Amino acid sequence: MRCSLTREMPAGISMLRPTGRMMRARAALSSLLALFVAAGHAAGAQAPSISGRVTSPGGYAIAGVAIEVPSGTPRAHTDSAGEYRITGVPPGGAVLRARRLGYQPVEITVIVPVSGDVRADLRLVATVQHLEAIEVRDRADPSESRLSGFRDRATRRSGGGQFITRAQLDLRANTRLIEIVRELPGVTMRGPTRYADRSVRFRGASCPPLVFVDGFPATAGEFELDIIDLSTVEGIEIYPGLASVPAEFQATRGQHRCGVIAVWSRPPRVRRVARRSERPTQVATLVDAGRVYEASDVDVRAMLLADESPAPVYPDSHWNAGVGGEAIIEVIVDTLGRVEPASVSVVSETSPAFGAAAREAVRSSVFAPALKGGRRVRQVVHVPVAFGRQPGSD
Image (cartoon, rainbow, N blue to C red; front, side):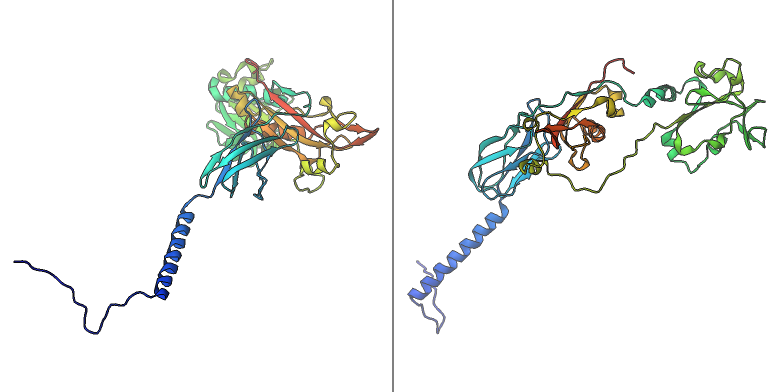
């Protein structure tokens, strides 16, 4: 037996044949849906971009390089790591240009995808004549060598001494040196004496400890610890008995027999006073406007006066690790031979620590100004600083 299923239309409903107006409405609806789908795909897709890193032939990052695509896309500049990114670049072939003062411009063609990122690393070759490199092969601050003995003994905790470092002092609420010493085990305080209002004695000692300041003994009489400003102290060594006093602190007349307190002052910090508040200088703009000259455009180039300029300070972390490197600093030297503070920038650095140390030193450097046509002019200068720690130079 055959069965067939038929679907009957409800009463009152009849099939309508599509008219031209209905077909046009359907077509319009389909187009609108297609637009919504396309928009959804576009929203999920990543806008095309170009990114990369700019380095020197030696592989060092170059900061401040202008990267542009001549298609109305905003210009980008490399950061301290030499990295850049340009977004919103039209798909297809794009001409990528890289320019920086003191380097030969580079122009390459990059194929930009419809979406996503394309990588374009660039290498620039210097065109300016750098000054002779400042070589840093030792600690520039003599006080660092002065403190090397204290730091070595504090690290080894040798001789039964007690050591208080600057970091520990910063954590204490005490503001007077005598209060710091008073907290140590085996220390007693006595009333006013001939030389001091308060006197320190170590356990079992009948005389005051011998005090050393920066390695020199105060043997004229009992030293008054209250006169030392704790904010100026880098470290303290305390040796409570004769047997614990190292050879460095043994006095010829035996004044060390009742113990020793060695006080080490902090390294001097150079205080810089800004001549005026300035915004960062756009060096390339000044050169293009003829207000600042490059080395190739002057008759006599600006010259660093090394004897009148501070030596860069080798970063402690890199010195202790035996790490060497270099940095190149860009500055504008004015007509008096001084560095314009707002112009100082790091062009290239092997580490941020080297860049910071070189920048601080070059900022205070003194130059013989450049000459053009018999008159002094402003010149942009690149100063290389090489940090080359030598083995055994501690």
